[in-house]
Length: 183
Image (cartoon, rainbow, N blue to C red; front, side):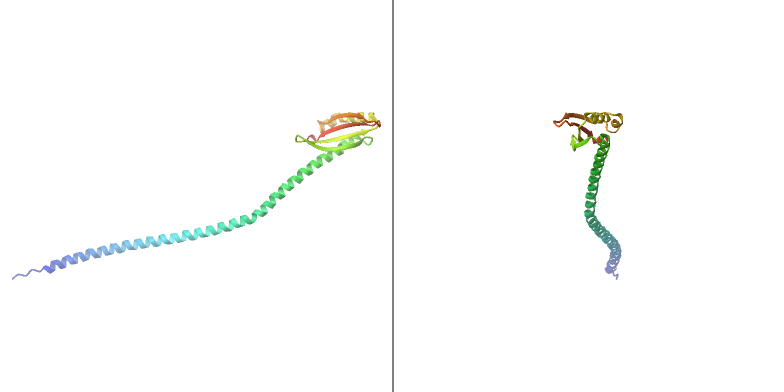
């Protein structure tokens, strides 16, 4: 009698299936290892990027605080610069006026009295106005000739003279307008 072994076939099929399962197990293990490795690398990179981001944010906050602390100094400096500029303009205008007063005092001479002197601003023009008084009309005539001289016109081109009057006391007055922007 012949025996038929059905188990050997089954054993072969089981061995074959076991080899396929082992093969799938190794493939799955390799895929799992790759996934775990990629995940670990991704998490490591994420941690590194976030730590760099925190570092940059803290540095940015410290720089902002430093800038804000310097803001008061900057505002103080800007105010100081504006004050110095205004003072410089005032001093320049004062020097122009003083130079004009000194120059015209030398032209008028000691026999002419400067009865009134005022500073005016008219349409962005700075004007210095003198009211001269003398008892002698010929002295005022000499002053008038000096005011119309070429040397004076080189320095103060637009000097205006007018308002020659005689008072009840017999003294003569003359108005002289000097634009300071020319001086």
